[in-house]
Image (cartoon, rainbow, N blue to C red; front, side):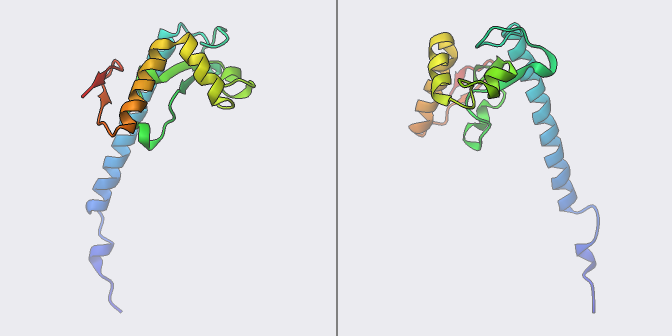
Length: 141
């Protein structure tokens, strides 16, 4: 029985692709850490719903539109991020995760700039537009 040595050879294209994926993942994590810090600073390290001061591990930077493939360009967009405390993020009856409808109404009333930006983004997405955002969260075509 012969073994095809080309299948077990190191340094092939598979290793290169692994390295590229690892680098892309590292770069994405770095972008996320920067965006998270900027969002928290913009929000004064306060939960934007209950206004309690939050820092460190008690601070949650929430993606308003989820971290889904459909919204990949909003992953580190400041207009898609909001600082919340753990209760407002996940635990409370009107939290961002438990009641998306309430959260949407709250966002429209309390953060109209972010709400309108994301509404416009979604409307364009539904029309099949290829709109993207720059680092400041502004629309670009």
